[in-house]
Image (tube, rainbow, N blue to C red; front, side, top):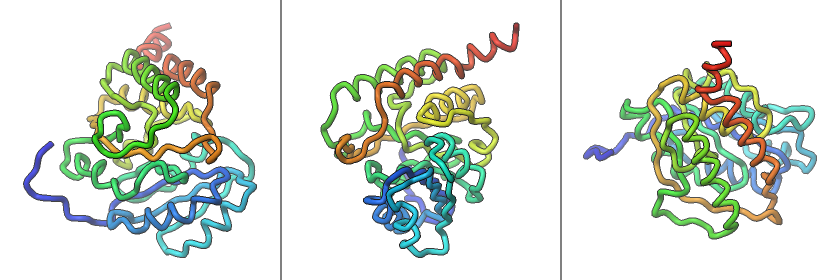
Length: 244
């Protein structure tokens, strides 16, 4: 998508930040988020952290930041549902608190939304010439296989279904009935977006992956659950279920 005129920044974006034991990075992440001229509000959902994440988040004082607490750990999907329901800005984006994704790249995802050609935009780690930390080979293979399987069931042609960076028009994400509590959110929301027949775009982004020693949480069991969710929430499966 080529345009001569650059976008004029405006505060139109709600950033939803699900957190579970991210005390080491959440303050730095919030400072980077708030530095973006696009950010109108930030909703931090602490999902039962036990390491001082809440205190670290509260140390970042800004009227745009709202902190919500889950009394117990319910999962990333549950935290996102809480955040999405509270969003009031025009667009909503998911932002993990672990510094793997760069808030300075919000304009990349917002361009198609602002130009009026997209309703949902995915940030792909696999189509970008931007810097990527080199880490786990089998994670990369797994992500690509899950994306391929998701595409087969949704008839989308995404390259990175599992990406954190997903941006939505607020009215789109708030009308989706989301049910998965953990990382099944990614295939579930992708399937339900596909069923809505809305305009989906994808842009390349950078990625600073972290190791398990750094606090990475997703594991092979989440990959198995993702396969189940791809089938369970696929538009094809949903149509067959309704026909019975």
